[in-house]
Length: 269
Length: 362
Image (cartoon, rainbow over all chains, first blue to last red; front, side):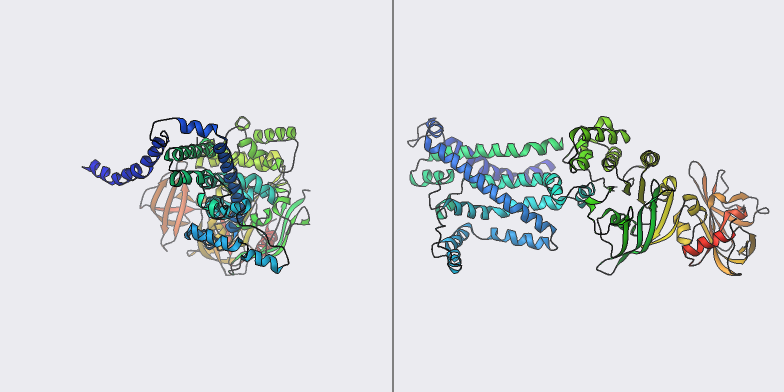
């Protein structure tokens, strides 16, 4: 009787996982073995790993995702460090998270307004007598906006791991003669590494497939794997190839997870 | 003569909310001695430690190290080290790296780091644990590593913030011996903070008893135990029976309707005083032979002695330590010698107290 009840409580979650996690992933794997005419084939994979287009696209995606993640860390870490020292730190962190409540598309359009030829930033440049810049549809603006979108997701885990550090570690470090900089590099950063790794996991993978931003801000000059997936499913209708790219993305996600998880396991042992 | 290494002059610490943590603290620490700041939690003892270590700024007064004012010198530039209550061993480093930390941040050479870390670990008898992770150590081992890490920089003063409070009773006793031995081997000054009077009495050369931001009494463990300055000190250090009495004349004290010969003097005639008698100084005898008659209420067997709780006719509680058991509800007599009593005046300052003691002691 009791056991049945427990099974009953568990059912919704199993169904949820089966329908929305396992089934889609299985379907992606399944579709990746069919060509455009619904014939079973391995050609999709063969094409992916032999064609220059896909490989450069993968390299590009990884490079962009890497840069986005890097900038997100470089901005987020000092910011989290400063916020964790503030008096009303919970309020400040709430303000940082606030933009995530706004729709991504809205934020993208806001940036178009800011960065466009007649936008606010260029007006400011003109005001100070600087020449007008073409900022929209450049790699730099794509990375900047993408990093901006990802920052809250990077800051939160870092902030949490920073506030977890007991003050006595910092005192011990200073007591033993470490300067503030040495304390940061030898004690605080290593101790917040789990937070940084969580941040990387949350930011890097979505950054591999940011198709909407690459279109709106990057002006389709930036072609990532995400753009390619969208093209295959909506334009060329080659679901097989789209799924193959999806599989590649899933596998790279697993790789990133494994790479960022090793140390934590060792410490727990 | 030994030299003063740390000195506090008229130190005050006030917080923004108006709370005064330290009130006019002044003391000197000599080289190579073991000092203890003893007091209940919240008495300001840790604040003193932190102001010497450089973790908190004093509101006024001077903190001197080796004769120089160090109020404005940051913690990392002060030549003293701290053993923290929670040890604060860096979890991302192993034992060797933890102990080596103080040397690494000073850019010491590799081979020098090797030998000095080895020496420090040897001091705490854990030289074979260099490659262990911190999480693999027991509480007592972590404690020793924290000490090794703090002495690797060869400080002149080691500050210890209740370092034994997280250990179990047996280990705590062992560590008391080891800390004392370590201090004597190193020959440096230890300033130990604790609320445990037993620890303080066992290890210290000199104890500062604190309460509510003030130092009430300084002295050797024996002096403080035998001649507490006031009710608080007598009650806090060891167990004591305190009764109200009257100083009839020098060496004559009256309490509970009797007059007794005592060994204290220098007070006004008929001055109201408090009389302290330690439980181990009371001897149980027959009611006729006793100077006081009490009725036994409860007895607890403590292993090496019986703790006997008794009441006199006036309702005062008497605590007696005796090697032999008594009988519940029996009327017994208590005897004590003149030296077993210690007389305390109300509101006597430490300076006046010391002056008075000197005036009649040899």
